[in-house]
Length: 100
Image (tube, rainbow, N blue to C red; front, side):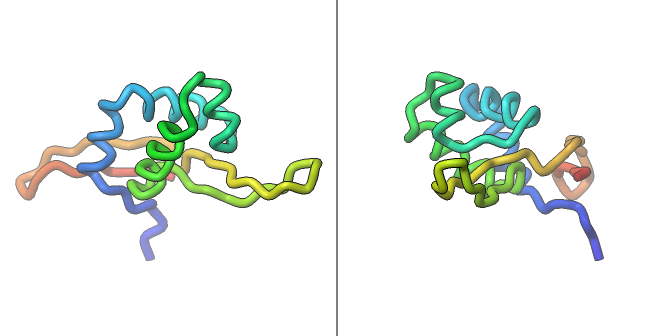
């Protein structure tokens, strides 16, 4: 069984050229945060944050988990799930090799 995360190479490359997604990844690599906290910390609209989070999660770069805050509210927390990505050029095309 392969324990490596599955990433969508084309989508990841697209996201890495997106300044908002990159800013979010730079913060999420340090700590897991909610969309609301990301929006406030990065001074981005919630719509922008949610769109990028959806794309990053679909691409396999981040993961969400449910967290309960001290007031009892349930919120999704987002965290980066890859430690390293290596862009590979092969005879069958471009791919990303990912380590968790």
